[in-house]
Image (cartoon, rainbow, N blue to C red; front, side, top):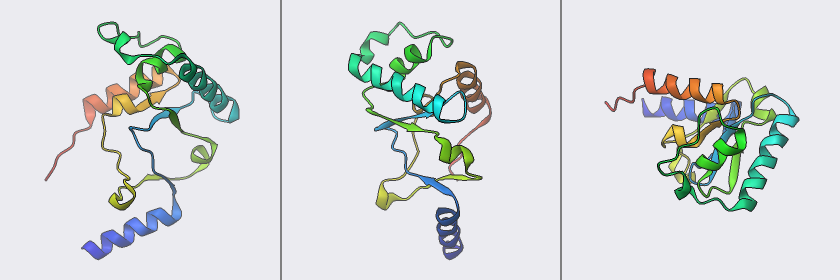
Length: 141
């Protein structure tokens, strides 16, 4: 059984777009549109926010509305992460994206998804987070 699982992991790492996103270092960011313009827009917003040096404590008791601007929503969840993990053009074109779990490379996406995933389109953000909340369960058996 273990041998088969190892072979599957090795196969997935060879044939898929493999990313090692680290939730404490970056914000997983999905642009509202495909192509370079959407990515460039998110990078610019992120760069502007880093210059502003926003203190996340200012949002305690004053949450940002779900339909606020991209910049306002990103400023609330960025929380000192200096990088964006962008759903870039390469990922958008890939038939399969694989987020591996490999402890030797400190690769594991076990985190609070609602603080790690950021969709530029607030409607996609809201739908995805509600879907996960209402339909996905982790069962450790």
